Amino acid sequence: MRRLSQVFLNSDEIADKIAAAIPLRGKTVLEIGAGTGILTRALAKRAKRIVAIEIDAKLARTLAENAPKNVEVIHADALSFNSAGFDTVFSNLPYHLSSPLLFRILESDFKKAVVLLQKEFALRLVAEPDEDDYSRLTVMTQAKADVELVGEVTREHFDPQPQVDSILVLLKRKAKPVPLDADLVNALFQHKNQTIRNAFEHSAYALKKEKDELREFADSLEVKDRRVRSLSLDELAWLSKKYANSL
Ligand code: SAM
Figure 1 (cartoon, rainbow, N blue to C red):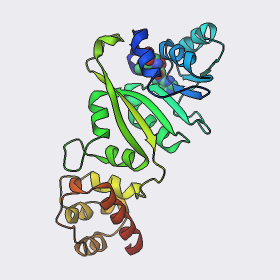
Figure 2: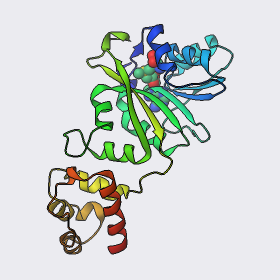
Figure 3: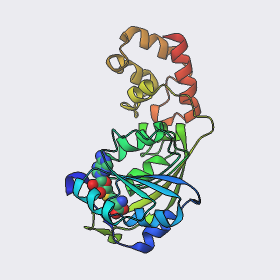
């Protein structure tokens, strides 16, 4: 079903490589979007226990009937499932929900997450300031996690074959997250090619502030003539703090 991004891995060898991305001995793993269970079974060989979430009732039932003993299949929407307490997450993420599910993982108790993502999406997670791919997604992800590209999984390893290749990504929770004002980052990156001064001026509605006070604040900044897209994570943390203290 295209609506649910049901693009299944077709190679046990690749599923095994994905499961081997991090050590799983003795671990309980949360798997999001188990589908036909090809990755679930590879994980079950390595980990102590797998909790596999699947939204499609038929797939969930079939998997529950055939799954190894250490797999618990839960028919649920991963967007509303309470993932508290899971420190290890795996997913061949449904493409249409990559962003919301990634943000849910970042907000959860995860320590390590191994996620298969569309190549273009994955590259945005590791972009550097001033690169085209540098975006709100980059910044909000890197604020919480160190991001590592593990390797590419090309399109022929999926059924039905998608139009794009994928990349396996390892996210490791940062011991100390970079403190960012998510609303501020969100507002400014809507205008990421503009100068910081103009971006503030155009963010009055999003930030629920008066244009004049935002202009005055922006004018006081040394970085006011820089482009939003040039700000590093640390600079955005500095700006978040200054904004909180001034407005
Ligand atoms: N893990 C399997 C694999 O690697 O072959 C399936 C991956 S497929 C890209 C994504 C799976 O997520 C599908 O089985 C789909 O039904 C399921 N899915 C889609 N939206 C979901 C949601 N909101 N919550 C849980 N599962 C979802």
